[in-house]
Length: 300
Image (tube, rainbow, N blue to C red; front, side, top):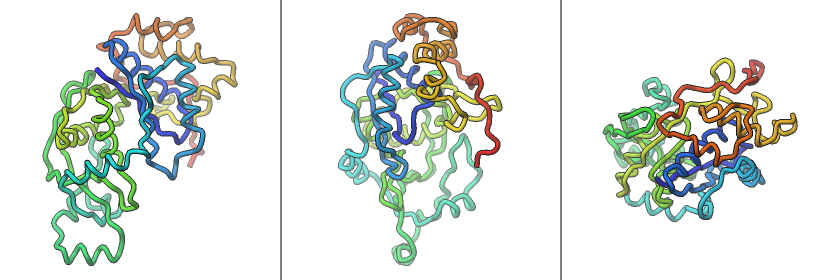
């Protein structure tokens, strides 16, 4: 299975990100297959200079290595244009607020588009285009798609008419991730289980683009003491911050390995040591609390 890890260079990786990278590395190496790296830098408004290099340095410090050159999403516009041209799409003029008011409550973390702009006439589209720019949505017409996840089994979801290109011209994640996974030969996707609900969309699009959908491994998230997904606001949760407090990469590696049931939290272990003990069928699905992480109720 060819795996991948695809960080966005918007901030330093926290231990939740690093744990997912560790699982991706272990799954790929256990299968004797490569692990690809992709830098998902399409959200130019949030990308920060130097962050990608710091992320790679942290991964290297833990012993998480990759095969082949990194793929950079901001260099892939031609591939996205080609994929877009092969799909049935239509312009959508809805704002996020309008969609939220018109659609049902999110299911599995996914708010589905109700089809407001799907059947507009040419005259209606021209009138709305004078008011605001349009995003482009794929025409899926409410089909369903079933994916296979190694931890969760078969997962079926409705595929709505999701955005492929945003109104500001930026490529949407759901298009870019599929096009890039196909290009990199990825057939196993390891990521946090907060993204499980989006897997049917992406698998369906993979099929529309003529490829076989990957197998998924959606791992449990790292959370604070109140069950909130870990974020930088929780304090010392990045490798540099932990190092400043006297906790080096080896100690963090052991703590993450312990969270997967592979060692004691105070053990001296390498990634190869963890690999020798790794069984992909025993990856925990429940959230894991990072000791000491507490919710900051003063945060906005």
